[in-house]
Amino acid sequence: MQVTVFSKRHCQLCDAIKFELMDLQSEYGFSLREHFIEDDQSLRERAEDRVPFVEMELASGATVRFDFPVKQTELRRRIHAEMRRQTADRQA
Image 1 (cartoon, rainbow, N blue to C red):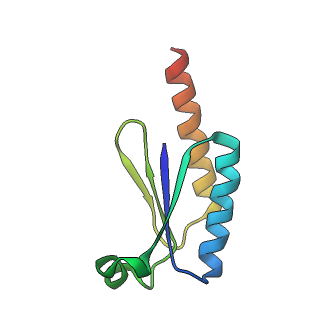
Image 2: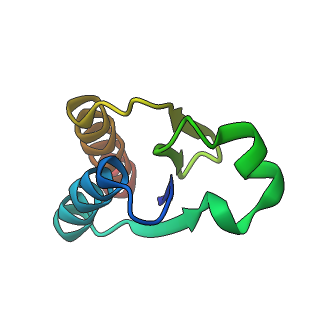
């Protein structure tokens, strides 16, 4: 599973979500990327006031998006459920 956090530099809300994701990454071992919207002109114009947000690319190929404001409990619950599903699929 690939998880991407879209953030701004020097953003406390962004850092809080990033640290939550890093904690979950150490627990579940998924791939984590950070994408700064300042580095992408079209993204900055569309989402400057709506960061952080998170996208999860699932093993099935589907993408799940958590829009601003990202709720940490909802994010944690979804990652946990996806990782359990992947484990069950491997064992089947």
